[in-house]
Length: 511
Image (cartoon, rainbow, N blue to C red; front, side, top):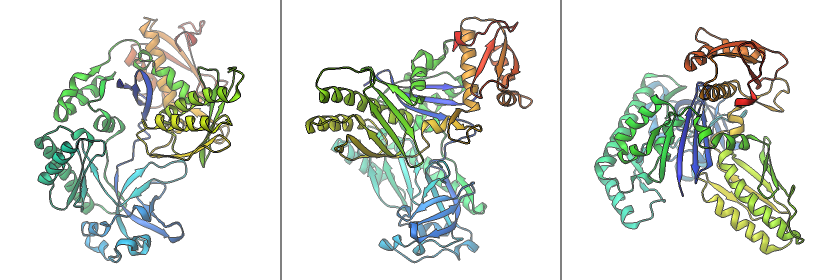
């Protein structure tokens, strides 16, 4: 399988696409106002313990308290107590071991200082989910303070290599720390692993200093942004190419790779063509398809994707498909195609939590088994943890998929002020990115350097706000004079480009 990482950077957002055999498989967005939180470590304070929920809520300094389930309380929680200021330690209980962890009072009391790490992003009105089992991931290793275990990634299947890496882990592991050896460590020597370990130990020492010098609640360690974490975790030897259209980011990636994975430098390229990078690799069309509620299949069938507060519902329909006389054979053909597309869309849309899939009913049990097997095989490519129940007699599959961050739909859209959140509109920063990509296409055709831009008044205010407004930045970046005008009859996500005289609408020509 040919895997590539394609990165597009614009004023409003950074988008990272992972393709498999030329088709979009995963997509990550990062915006200035919505930074990644997973991996961040907070020095917090227990806000309240709710025994009925088997959980506690932790004040980490954000709008919503973080959620700490009792099952996420590590055995070594009390060993963090010596890091807290002397006056704080009096509130820290020291009783409770083993199974007593199920009782929150064994470890937690209101006002108790606590060190936690974010495992899931805040979603909707729910705060971040956290754990007390703090770990620090590096390129080759994961460092676990106050532990003694040595683990090796399950993806390393060669017994000799596993034994070699475990022996290296014992040789380099400092006292008072546990280590997990990551998949990319396969074939690496002791020097590289030791350098990574020493870097992580220094990081931990800095975290301890931050705790000593600050009062709870406080962010003591910020993990890498989305771009850096993708390079660290996903740019592995099985990636054939990484292409990026930002010179500054390209230099940063090259510098990082020269230190930790020199052979991958030759697989990294700076994209400088006039055509937008996602257009060139066919990703823009795939994204538009993955934002749609309705996705058509080649056979003529289609799939509906609907989000609710509790779950995501997916419905498969036969649509325009005619097929043969045998209803079960027709249904099986559409269902198999839909199963492959649904498994792919779950990854692209990053749909997590409970998922209900309503396939077309089939009478023959053998056909239902074929559908199950096909769907399970497709889900093996998903890095997220999934649990799938057998297909029911009604053709329904119930499953759960690990949810770490909000689904793609909620990442790049915001609640519509006109419908109070019952519908969705594209966010201003994403609309800005779409405007920038339009200008890129326009300038790639060597269009004139004078344009008029018509947008909704609220979007116009966003584009023109500040001394260095977004519209000025676009004008300077593409060396084009852009006259901004507001039209209250336009929708928030709509924009129109006119020529210098305002007589010809150029929008559709370069959309």
